[in-house]
Image (tube, rainbow, N blue to C red):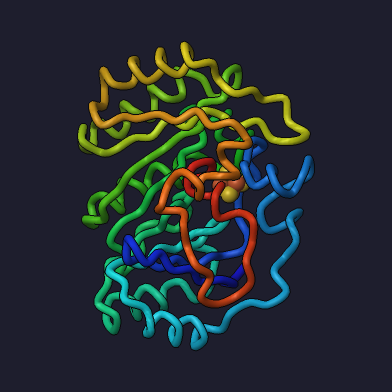
Length: 261
Ligand code: SF4
């Protein structure tokens, strides 16, 4: 559970620091696209051969012309050095900081400007079933991060037959009570090896998006195939990054869209 790679997107002037490992075990986790049927972030896909020290990360970040620093990878808040790197980014680099995706377990954090939180379910039973944790931890943390002034966006994976419309509407209602303008991304389930969950149809996506829009105007949706998810860098220049430190890992194209927290 530590950072192992730094990438740089020259066009959009941001760097990303990647963590290895996660505290949840969502059955539809898109990391399984690469790691296979038993894949769980931090457990089943191979660990990096080398982790980066704080000083290695700071040294490369000082060389980059960036405006924003992202933290990604499984669950980035489990990396012990995250608080110190957030402080470094804010105080020394003077850049904006964002958790590109997080499951919300450790929000809010000092020196954090923004976070994209991936909710797994609205109902307590399903949340426990999917993640092994109570939903109150995540929802309460989100509220506290909102109160702390962190710029928040949210997402949930729409899994037909498992995480259905009532889960999406429950979350949308929760978000709307905080602020109707919180951006909300509905991600269609990406089928992964060893799991029975299917991709929603276009009609199903349209129906849930329209229903959620009645509560939250800033809603969008995506419906990626496994192939789409693995080739995002060819279609979206935000994913066209250069590895600056650490080893390449074939997950960069999947993380933001399929996990997102
Ligand atoms: S979907 Fe996200 S929170 Fe769930 S196991 Fe995968 S990386 Fe962790």
